[in-house]
Length: 486
Ligand code: NAD
Image (cartoon, protein in one colour):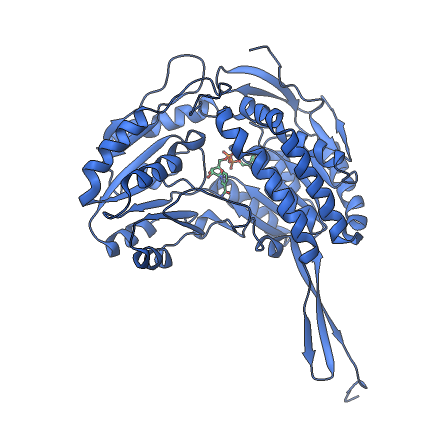
């Protein structure tokens, strides 16, 4: 791999242009498959943060005053451009994250384009209501919030940027977006594309940096809303910082989601769902069903087929389209995952397959399955964020619901069964923001997505996102004489 093969034009994108400032600390961008340095960006200095926020504030007023259909048209044009450039964007995403091209070609920029198209179309449908008051009346106006800060995680960089920018911009806000310091590249491409599609300067800005840059955005008086995708500990900090200024928030945080497989399920579908929900993106997905509860009658057959299918996964160079599974994002993440694997063995879980790293400079961990996992084991309680599936046994419906809900998280859950009455009865009792019946981890933009309990606050996508990027102004209209006692 050539050094610096993914070097962007400049580190930041502010007020419609690429901007460099080498005074900020350098961040090396590492390709996870071979640990080579593919780019170097610099953290945003306080002066640049100031510039981006001022640009956003200046641009937002005029943008909000446009007809929503005109805002939507620009976003839909950007969606088309993203699709035209899908292969280039996917290659950048694969270099940056290590996720196989086989995935990024269909899941990342493609999902981002869907968000731009969906919210572009939704923009003109957002209206207030008229409230009759017997002579007098009132009406409401859905107004933008103002300048929104977006802070991203490293697992789905361009998707996260689009899931935040698309609704923010559609409903008349401006955004300053800080990607994860691990994956700084693709958000810059989104900014470029939005400019090409006709977005006025200043409405979508990208600043690079670590947590401190995110913290500066979350505490700035010019910011009306903070939308974070990240871990629960970071969420707690950002939510607290936003609360100081009574800012709106969306918090898309971590999970330890249950996937429940009843005896009557289609076994191959259930295994397919469990594998998608544990091994896609090398397991680095917030909504993964990492606690797979399998009813006793199905257990042995399930484990046998799961082992065979897991061992057939093709690991390798993520740039090769035949590769099904790539490396983890970083050496640190790999060590963390290997630590959880060792811990699970020490606590008595049975290693069914995998469990080791691959030799070489890349951050590869084999797809790993533990059987006979119990609820109290660390591997069943903490988010691993790697290709590690825990299989737990259960007997009855009531028991599995109680155990599935026994976690601080509540992002997602899945149920595999042919008994539809049972499927609906079970999801009604599961504490999770998104539930899948006989499917797993599908997140089309039409569907609201987000967590309950510690997994988050607010929803992205779907019509629900309108609530999180607008606020209501109420107008009372007096139609008669003022009835005053004075
Ligand atoms: P992280 O919490 O370490 O970082 C997330 C972002 O927050 C990064 O951009 C980071 O620089 C920034 N940040 C860190 N400290 C900050 C601070 N004090 N103030 C402001 N910003 C700060 O998360 P990560 O390791 O990048 O991503 C993995 C986590 O994200 C997992 O827990 C995963 O479950 C979660 N995630 C959730 C969703 C979802 O939609 N619910 C989606 C993807 C990932």
